[in-house]
Length: 260
Length: 311
Ligand SMILES: Nc1ncnc2c1ncn2[C@@H]1O[C@H](COP(=O)(O)OP(=O)(O)O)[C@@H](O)[C@H]1O
Ligand SMILES: [Mg+2]
Image (tube, rainbow over all chains, first blue to last red; front, side, top):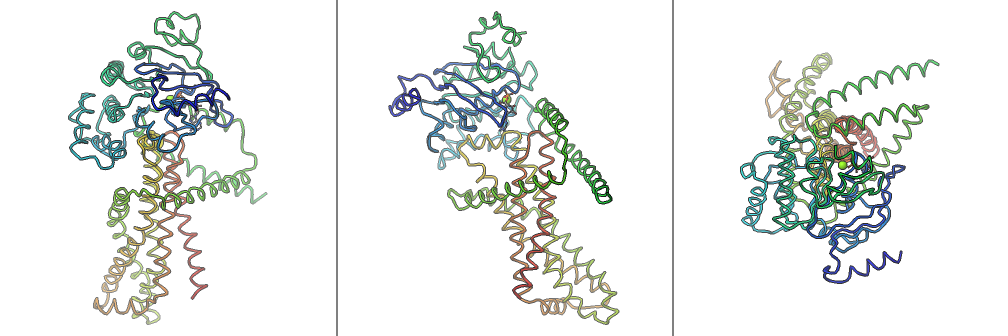
């Protein structure tokens, strides 16, 4: 408890230079009824860092990152994002967190009823209600150029291939220049070549905008390309942590099973 | 014993029907979420296991409990709707878009049905009326039955089928493919943006569609009357409006707002709370139509009771 208070007291200080951790989780728990998905999550990520989270299907990886942007409320523990406690923050701060933390959804989550351009404009218009149209156009063009799909602006999402949809989703996620990117299985369901392209794109985005990223995946190639550090989630807690090489030679069967 | 046998037979038939509808729905929406296939398969399996473990022992009690819980959940959803409805900011652009989609895009369908309704009703009732030598009363009778009852109910049922199921499927697939979550992280209240606009749009548009449908139905009836014998348009409409009272028109018009409200509400509720997977989307769309149609009849019954009470 004392710990909680210390961290909350820290949130009143203006700059988070002292506190380099973009996300800090201590003892985070989450259950759905009898399904104890997250039991004891301890996790930090620093500015500019790429952390890959490995874990079997259904271990709560998506739940974990949804907690960070307040889509799911944890049952207990400490969860600080950009130095502020997500659990107790007001709507304004939460919307600030959601602007600074971009979320790439597993299924892409492009709005079916909107064109690619409208999809990209959506977060901008929601954030800045009265931005001049030229500035919005510039942002959209830049975002599309970043993912190499300049000529799709007027297409509908249903006209695009799986890989293209993922790219457009990425473009939409980075259009507000977030400091932290959360990728939920960015390469799942894509062929190996497209997967590699997406992985490289993730790295490019990180270099260009100096973002930190949490990348959830079980695609080991993607992890190899993108990870500074890898963490393995199993049964509601992290069971291993290290660089790609370290974990590859791990003695733990579960950890090694991801690398085969 | 007999009633229980009958019931189980009925239940089997119902299960069969529902299964058929569902597979048709799945075939329709199958393309939506190809990417989620694995998780869906896993989830379907889980469900099967779960239902194997706990066979429902008292189907009636189970059904009753489910019914009460559903009513509670829908009431809560309605309550949230009214709370978000009055709270700024308002999503005017989306509201206009939804009104266009539910109203304008249903005009043709509602118009054609209205026309056939008026025409058929006239042709069918003519022999009986002729027998009594009361052919002159046809316009009045048709006008009363259409304006009071058939126009609102048929139009509402068509809207439940077209608009309600569409909302169930659309919001359901948005939920399944995380579009609703995506909206929320983009600083938008998805309930306000998706649900409030849609429910308000149907509440406002269904009455307008009913007026439109009633008018076309009267034209249909006019043509029906003129298939045999000759009545001028002016005479027909004079006769029709003569028999219509303010007390016929107003309650009929007011109940249309409730029809519209319930169609939007049920469609959105089902979609917004649909389960994962394409199966969930099909189910959402399917039960949106079934429940909304049933509710239209129930509201109609209540409205008629209230009207006779006060007139
Ligand atoms: N909103 C929710 N309501 C109930 N259960 C949920 C919800 N979201 C996730 N779960 C459950 O939590 C567990 C972990 O889900 P998830 O985080 O999606 O797994 P994954 O690691 O594959 O991303 C699953 O058993 C899932 O059924
Ligand atoms: Mg997941």
